[in-house]
Length: 98
Image 1 (cartoon, rainbow, N blue to C red):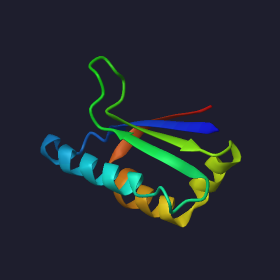
Image 2: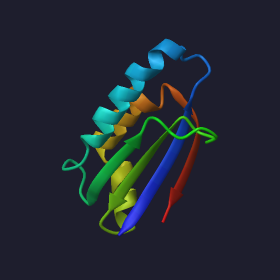
Image 3: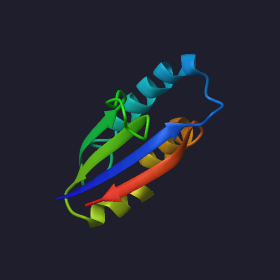
């Protein structure tokens, strides 16, 4: 079992009124990757972190084994979601795999 955690903030040019819609789309599309990516067992997208945290959102994925994190990163379905609705709007990425 391996876990992949990624956190981001919104870019400064993202309007506050656009954030809820963007978060909802990210959540829906990232969680839909289960069943599309080999070895991806579970996806949780956090859209409402507790006060005092350093990032506005987080992705937590569970994989069958550590090698599946690299498989996930290179999957066309994952890349399509990241390119369409995550990377254009986010910055300050932090990642931890364990």
